[in-house]
Length: 119
Image 1 (cartoon, helix red, strand yellow):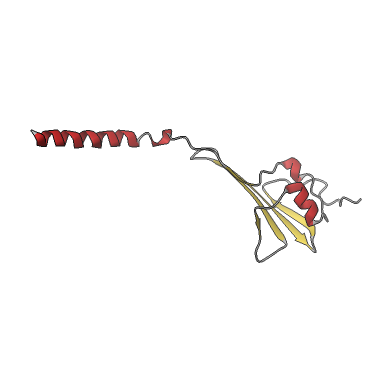
Image 2 (cartoon, rainbow, N blue to C red):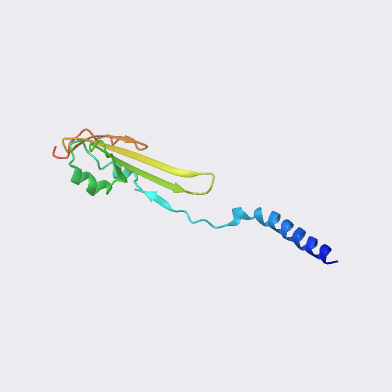
């Protein structure tokens, strides 16, 4: 009799754990943005020959500065919308002699990028 009661308890626990394991997708996960959120309007303010300080003012502090090459700054942004999809954006800014020379990444280069600010 006690054996049947123990078996029934274990069987109930096993069935409940199987059913409840299917509910793991119901757990609320907070969407946490990571990195530098940039918009095209921010990128449109960049001009060739800007100083590092001017780029910092426009874009903010980069996520990563290349440890072996100080002429590159990396701006990355990741936003997990749900488990299957995420939004990723990146921008790399290149300097020569502490002056901006190029930008590459997921944004369009501004139409008047090659026109310096002082002209």
